[in-house]
Length: 352
Image (cartoon, rainbow, N blue to C red):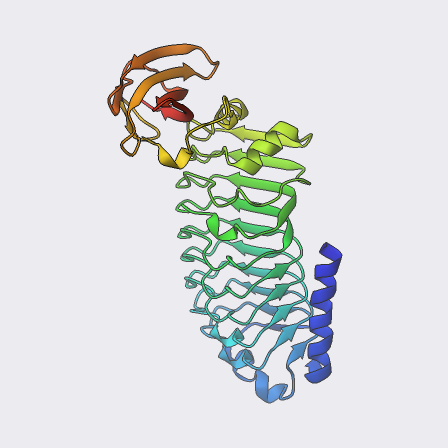
C-alpha cells in the first residue's frame, strides 16, 4: 500500500511537470522578504520546483510571492521565521514530494494557505510553533508516506485540519504539547505501522478518536507522562496489548492509564452484556465519594462493585441511582448492574 501511495505522489508530480514549467533542480533557499517578492520576476515560468525549498528569514512576513508554485519535488522547510503571519502564498501548492517541516514560526496560528495541498511524499513535522492552535487550512491533505511528528507546540489544542488524512503512516508522535486536549482529528488514518509515542501532553485526558486506526503491524507503543490521561483503553490499544509481541511503555499518566496493568484491567470485558452500554451512564468517572447511575428509567435491582482482581467489595439491592463509594480507595473498579433482569458491567475509577 505504501508503494502504491508513493506511486500516486510521483504520478501527480510527473503529470504536473508535463503541463507546468519546472525549474531549480538544485532547490532554493529564501532567506529574506525580497527574494520571495522577486521570485516570479526572476523565475516567470516556474510552477514546479524540482529540488528542495527552504524558507528561513528574520524579515519574512509573507510568502505571497510564491503563489505561482504548484508543486515541489523535494522537501519544503519553513523554519525560524519570527515575523511570518500565515502561509497564504502557498495557496496553489498541490503536492510535496519529500518532507514538510514547519518549525519555529511563532506567529502562525494555523495552516490557512495550504488549502490545495493533497499529498506529502515524506514526513509531516510540526515543531516548536508556540502560537499554533490547530491544523486548519491543511484540510485537503489525504495522503502521506512516513511519520507524523507533532512536538512542543505550546498553544496547540487539537489536530483539526487532519480529518481527511487516510494514509498508512509509520510513526505518530505527539510530544510536549501542553494544552492539547483532543486527538480525534486523525481518526481516519488507515494504519500506523511502527510506533505510537504520546508523551508529555499534560492536558490530554483521552485517546478517543484513535480507536479505528489499525495497529496490526505496530512495533512499539509509548504512552507516558501525560498527567491527566486516564482513558487509554480504546479497542485497538486493547487488542495490541492482548495480541502484540511489540514493546509497550505505559507509565506516569493518570489513574486508569498509569501503567499497562491498569489499561489491561480497563480492557477487561467480563460477562457479555445484555444491556447496551449506551443505555446506562455511570458518572462522574473518575469519581470520588458518590457514583451516579442514569439507567433511563430502568429499575436497578442489584449493584455489585468488584475490585480490579474480581473480588466483590459491595452488594446493594434495589439500589437508588446514587451509590456511596466514599470507603473505596483510589483505583480501578467494576460495577455490575442488574436492570429489569438484564446485566451490564462498566468500569469506573476512584480518584481521591
